[in-house]
Image (tube, rainbow, N blue to C red; front, side):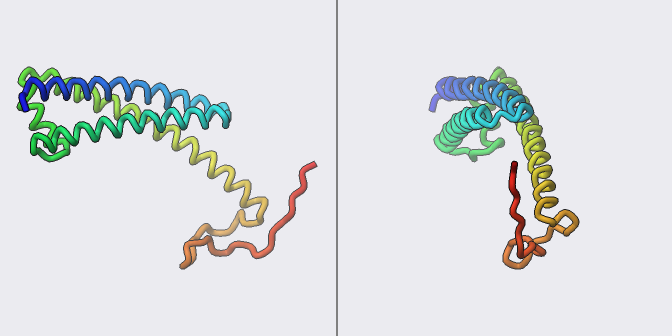
Length: 161
C-alpha cells in the first residue's frame, strides 16, 4: 500500500471517529438530563441513539484493525503508531489521533457519570425494596448457587389505594 493512500484512509477514519465521538458526548449529556428528569421514554430513545453511535465506533475500529492487518502490523496502539510514523511524517494525523483520545476520555467520563447516577438510583430502589420485604438489616451475601442467602420464605401483599 502506498503511504499517501494509507494516510488518506487513516485521515478519513480519524475524522469519522472524531465526529462520532462528538455526537456520542452530546448524547451522553442528553442522557444525563433525561436520567435526572426520570423521563423513561426519552431514556429509551437516548439509549438507542447511544447504541447506534457505539455501533459506528466499533465499525471504525474494525476498519482500523483491518488496515493494520493489511499492513502486517499488530492491530493495537503500537501497530497504529508504526503506521503513523510511516505514512504521516508531518505528524498532523498523530496530533489528531491524540485529540481523538481526549474526546474518547471525555465520553468515558460522561458515561461513568451516567452509570454512577443509575447505580445510585438502583441502590435506592433496592433499599426501599429491602424495607418493604423485611430484609433491610440483613447482610447481602450470595450462597453457593449464586442466589442471595437469607431471603425470606414468605412475602407480603401490598395494596395501593
